[in-house]
Length: 152
Image (cartoon, rainbow, N blue to C red; front, side, top):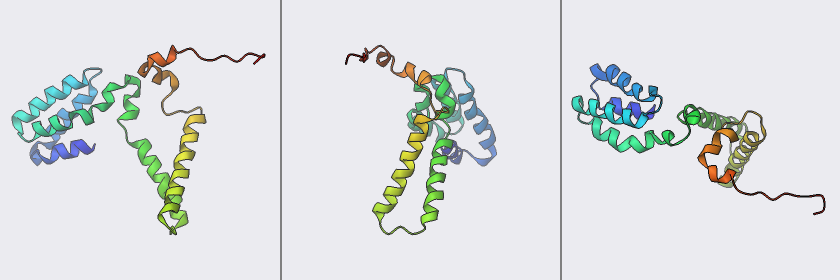
């Protein structure tokens, strides 16, 4: 979302709807997101010279999600979890009102983040499941694990 705003800033207002629609086609591709990025970048650069270098510069950052399994894409490219965390920090810090020092604010934020981490680890509704994460590190699944017996 933030990148498309930057991209549309270098496109004349009369062509912004067309450029935005063309840009959205990148993410509608089932697998070839990087190829679509290059193709759309070339099309936009032909009409809007500033768009090409902007897209070349942001390619790695915007397409970072494509290095993960496809099942994760929708969760990774959304900022909703981050916005949820920020909202929770804001909600709890408003209750305190004024912090006596910087360390107390850091303790509160750290406690909130630790609480959310524990919630993600223990709940049935995990953000990214172990099954969906296993393709990222297949060698970890084949490591031998220690087995405890009753005699130990």
